[in-house]
Amino acid sequence: MTTIHPRELDALRPALVRFAVLQLRNEALAEDVVQDALIAVLEKPDRFSGQSSLRTYVTGILKHKIVDALRSTKRELRIETGEDQTDAEVIDALFKPDGHTVDMPRQWGDPDATLEQKDFFRVLETCLERLPARNARIFMMREWLELDTEEICKELGISTSNAWVMLYRARVQLRECLDLNWFGR
Image 1 (cartoon, helix red, strand yellow):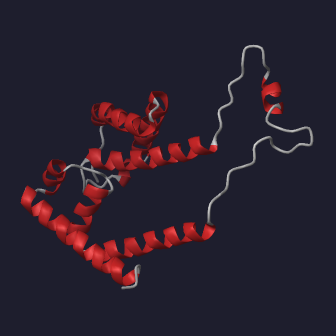
Image 2 (spheres, rainbow, N blue to C red):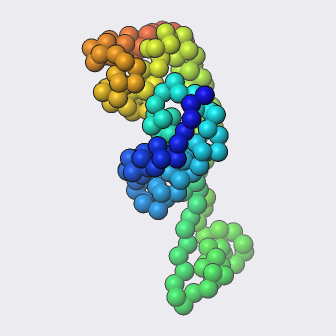
Image 3 (cartoon, rainbow, N blue to C red):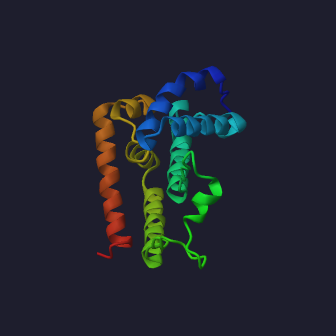
């Protein structure tokens, strides 16, 4: 088990906040999600196995916190009250006298398409599991964590050309697996 020192997390904080601000476009919300990610790390330090850098680990947690924040802001509607309005008056303006909403709720989308998308990600996950472990790891570091090649090479102790070859092989194998198992070729 690797020990996590709060000083290490403090050193990562500025980069994490910049990343969160780029994603959320809201400084206060970015600070909140970074704080949530750091608390998650501190509350369960035993989950960090040291197989990746602390930055990679915390960034992975932060990505989930950002996704949660994006989802919750889409569900929430902020209602600003004017100085001359009470909260009750603002809420009453959202409803007609018969109790129905003034604006119709938006469509939830096509449930079949949503299910199909979930099925796709299950197939993709299966295809990733079939890759050689290092190729799967480098693919996820590059495409999901969006680490640059230099960071990946440093983390894995490989050369740039080796990284590009491994990424190429991973992509080719994933394409073949998806062609067979999803696209039905």
